[in-house]
Image (cartoon, rainbow over all chains, first blue to last red; front, side, top):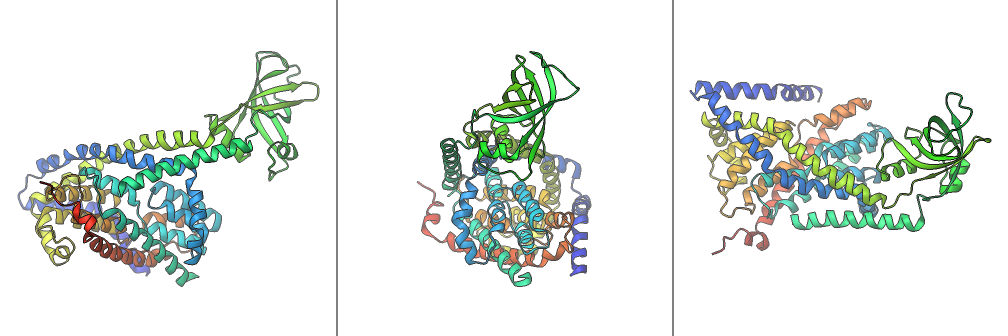
Length: 180
Length: 324
């Protein structure tokens, strides 16, 4: 496990400079005009970033309203019977609900949970696994579909939500099985 | 689907906020206008309070007096707060109570609703002989609704533009690198390397299409936790996939599958979690790695199966049909 972890961590450090070096050198060998190709590609960066703004505003404002209103506290109440049933401590519910909505929000929830219960407690471990296995699904959906102007998202949203629920259930089950 | 989610986030949010506020008004949670007895101590040995002057002072409030006003008990026996007295006469004036760690949570809420994060605005009547004063906070109403307006709507509208603009540089860098990879034939080479897998996942996309290369680069960056490289590759992949789209504005099957793989992404290095665990004093910060890899592998597999099954449903198939 330790060596695996250190190999993986080394990869993550050298991946970006390594990738840049490799692609640039490969391009030069294949006689691509690398400088002008880079500039040509980079020009699109601005357009893409500006194009996603309306989608991002729409999504983040809705999430902001929901978070600031305290509606999550009501959701905790409604969901607690279900979470008890799958062996999920109620203290981990804020993370489960925050994770797909907001990355910074989920980070805040994780730090608070560590402060209250400790990182090595069962709750702390469960929250860590949820944080690591989750993704800000709604942000990704807004940005990716926004970049190509898609508003009819078809099966992407339900499938994405189901995958998120599976990640939460798996986190609960694995942590309970290993450390419970 | 997006419509319903958007609608429910906004409607539920605003209704809960209004409901909470109406509840707080009817129970008078903030005790608007009610006077509290406090001890007031002026700094710098001031002997006489004069009108239209500013004084530094400290106020002391007994837990028992706090409880008689708000009906909630305090953890400490008394609260000591720095304040600023602005007199209008020798007996009356305004008092600004500075917020610090000792400030009760309820008072912090009041100051937020007063739209002032540094101090609480209040009126004061001073009894100079006994060094006591009667303090009443400037009334607040609709605390939650104003939080929704300020912390929700206005702040997030601003944040989203900052986020998007913050992407420009990193976006330009990776799209530039991507162009080199594209022109040198590296992207098509990568795509043909993983042909057996990708043609199964994305049957509608030609195996040597540039979208394949971009998607592979996005998925592998995501697995390694390289979020800032993953987004530009992913957006490039979406653009390429959109070139194959016959009905602009509607997601194709390939786009949906790609997004589900993306949001459920197998995580080999949850770097942020490990860093925060280490900073929080965990004895073994990386112990969560195994469960994370397993949980994300399972949820990616389930996600792919679900998105494939859903794509066969009539309601979703119908949306792809081109009219006329």
